[in-house]
Length: 367
Ligand SMILES: Nc1ncnc2c1ncn2[C@@H]1O[C@H](COP(=O)(O)OP(=O)(O)OP(=O)(O)O)[C@@H](O)[C@H]1O
Image (cartoon, rainbow, N blue to C red):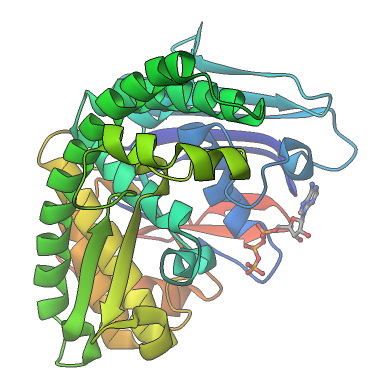
């Protein structure tokens, strides 16, 4: 799958852009503040309905404008459009019809993003890592989205009862039954993808020269005690949940752990090693997904940051195996294109765009 055409209006400093993208590698080069990341952010909005930098749509609407629009044609025949208005309104359309949820967008455009926030997979909260695993499960296991939705509904109801301050065992029992049914199912689907993810990450890291990266271990915590079923764990935790006013056990508390010799990976690995670990995880996620459906699109913001030439080259090779299309940003064209030009066709002849004050132009001289 690939974006063939991308239209952006009033998105951060981009007034209007109409880009014909290459189905392989697209490089966006320009000085700081020129608008490179905004292009990736616009594509991210098409796949998720929101920006990756801010939950506030207003902050990405071009100053002094009432709304933004982003539109793309995919080579799969889908057209995706997102409009966001400063007054809070907006529309999400798939092939001209209103989309029911942002997961429909994600289903049309599976996307992997590597940027400076990617380190939060190692040093951020469990929610970030849970979402990594869930991206894979969502794209591979068709039951997952509905089970997770059922779980969220039951969780909301149980929390509402807990906030009332006293427990009616019959009422809470109904929601705990639904929570445990969906929750056990969510855990089973996650666990099966986790095992495959861990194996794929290990294989990728073995391609790197010997270092502490080869000693990274990944583990999965399901969100409740190992020895018991979820129904029992929920019953046991009623009183303490009541005092806290919310449910503190279950798959909404699941986590992935990355460790090196028992220590959290981010305490041990260098910044470059952490970035390679994140790149390996994201590549492995894409590999698992493309066993079942189209290859995802990769967005890579400033690849050279923190990575030496060898690691940039290794990452470009990884992406070449599991991505359908890549959009990469960088300041200098020579440095940004180098890892890609060393690959085999079609990855070795990137389409280059120059970005200047929000204006984007294709390099006429590019191969
Ligand atoms: N709502 C907005 N309206 C207009 N301009 C904005 C808005 N929000 C941010 N900007 C400006 O948009 C420009 C583009 O930002 P962007 O992050 O895309 O730059 P970049 O080329 O990726 O820079 P860097 O190389 O520093 O990461 C910046 O100059 C920023 O100040």
